[in-house]
Image (cartoon, one colour):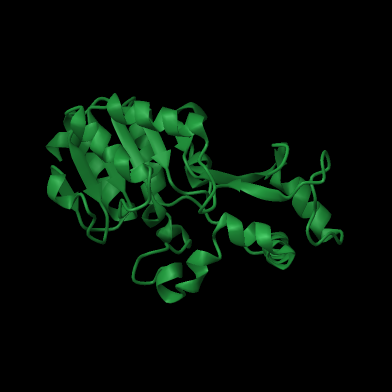
Length: 246
């Protein structure tokens, strides 16, 4: 693709669609978690988590009892690492909390996890942070709803739930990257969740072309310079590989 081949500061936004080929289901697609079970969306709210010790206990139990192999980065994730290797990745903003971009090799200074992550926990009262494994070990040793060791407050993963404010610094970094790129690449997202959905608009206002890679239509397709309607793990190696060959 000529547009991508010519770009020197590519800002990438990824959504759940880039991780489906790693075995992580998306939310709103035809086989999405919330498509199959609409009630699951309401259960992902901060209010739901805060209001019920039973919900928190079940959340921690599921997380601590997971014994299967961890998802691994797929060819889509690795293609973005290639874009980084070429020196043309300006920033990678992800709505995902799965950590697969870091696992693939994306540099932390280029990555903005705008919805947080699952590698750590945070106290919702005092803000104490730590490694997720610390809490999971407590659950495995019998605590059903572990409290903050510093203040006794409610602990939660460092992933952002519906109804929970985003980190201001992450939003700032994402907005600055969108305004300072020469191409905005949206991958595996229907561009419906705010404020991430506004980032392509910021890029467009600053005259950066928009390229969308997504299986489903998005609300910004008509404003995109190009739309690629195949999966990320197929599309990105072709797009970025062809750009590298030019």
